[in-house]
Length: 261
Image 1 (cartoon, rainbow, N blue to C red):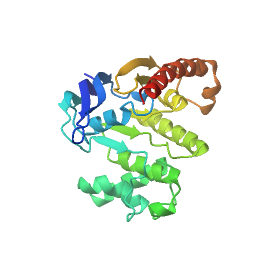
Image 2: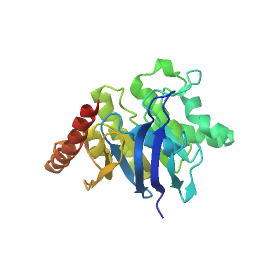
Image 3: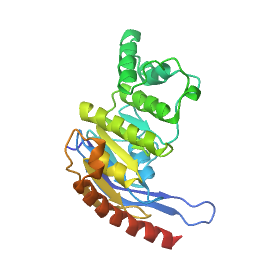
């Protein structure tokens, strides 16, 4: 059984007043195995984030269904940890309290909660910043906190919606290495949305390419680069070959999307 099964899922947004409804997603079927790291790659507006929100239970599909561990997704839940592009930390809570939020909601005892929070703050390299508030942190540090908050809750799957899109290139590269290192140790099932081709290849065990809107799956590309992955693999011949292939796939869809505007 797949960890995550997306079965013939589509999403149509009704039009306002007399405007035409927007078909965001054609029926999509996708299976994600346990411990898999799947990146979803596609042109802007292709429905990548819509699909992730459906998996998160933040929206409902127009047709089809989504199963997590064989159970239909009917709404948001702690079995799915979500990290957004925007910094969604609670500004009135410290780093430690943000990371502890889900554990507190679940009623985890204080001693156990403190141990888990300490462990994840160390894993995302924020030791010394436990008592800082979000406004005192850089963008990269805020996303480290958001990732720690999601993982501290021990979700069945981690969902990331372009989490590094607002970061500068150097910080983004470091955050990619951080997330990949955590996955290589934890082997948590991950579904990661991005529009960055290099990011998609570097992180994934499989890249799912989506078409221009209405989004559907155009291709699935297996990434067989070895682990542990070092950032220097981005300059390898194997990486360049994958990048060239995916660049052509995405460029064709981007051109098509521009023609529809």
